[in-house]
Length: 72
Image 1: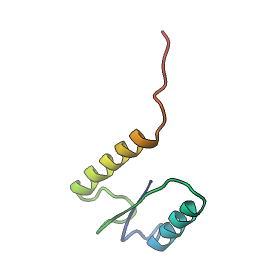
Image 2 (image 1 turned 180 degrees about the vertical axis):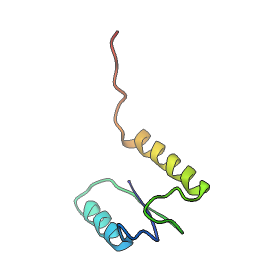
Image 3 (image 1 turned 120 degrees about the vertical axis):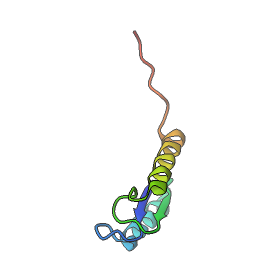
Image 4 (image 1 turned 45 degrees about the horizontal axis):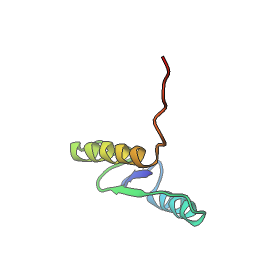
């Protein structure tokens, strides 16, 4: 899961898109989310912060593996 702001100067959008395409080319399950008006982080707007949290929770729910069992 790659989340990036369209205004990101640290990791430019073109670089993120190339990495995304390279992962897809070798069969890695991945998603690319672009946040309008955001820089390197995706939380400068409350709505984007909430979206980030929801996307992360869904990603780990789908791809995070099985919960570990503990023994007492």
